[in-house]
Image 1 (tube, rainbow, N blue to C red):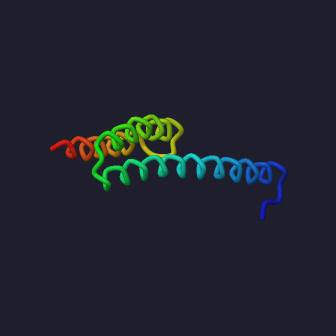
Image 2 (cartoon, rainbow, N blue to C red):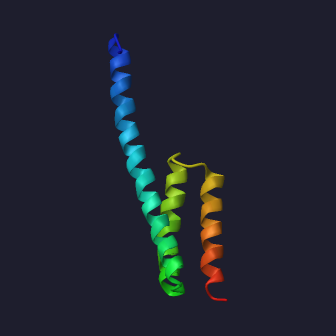
Length: 88
């Protein structure tokens, strides 16, 4: 348990930041899940619209430090490849 005033303030700040990060991570995962569900159904147009909605969310999460930039790029790239493969 924190004793000093500054340590108590830091625990409050950390708790607030953790809640925000958890919300952002959850939002990103929801968008990714929507794309994966659309891919599973085999509907390319639906999957493409879901991907277009998910891409900015994933990159925004990377900007805020929720995921690493390369991790976000890899996620988007792999989802795009899977959506593209539906056309074949």
